[in-house]
Image (cartoon, rainbow, N blue to C red):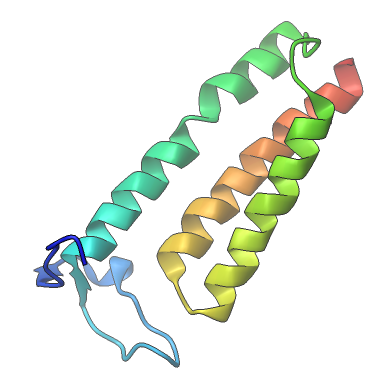
Length: 111
């Protein structure tokens, strides 16, 4: 698919991908590394929004329905990752969910 190799890349043991559907290995494939990098970037993108919401205590420009639907969607990705034993999906979306819920709490608290 897309000509991307599933060649293994050596990574630290803390980054191992394992589960019932995936044998324990100290290697991630190149596509796993791309997924982890993408997950890290899309997770970190929420930090400025969280910081701004809590620092300025002004969330009028944030859409409550959008953030509620986004929270449910990201929670579904966490459940999907758990069901497929995909730690990259679980990790990225789990942290994102925490940050998104933080913005939601600020929205509910500050209006």
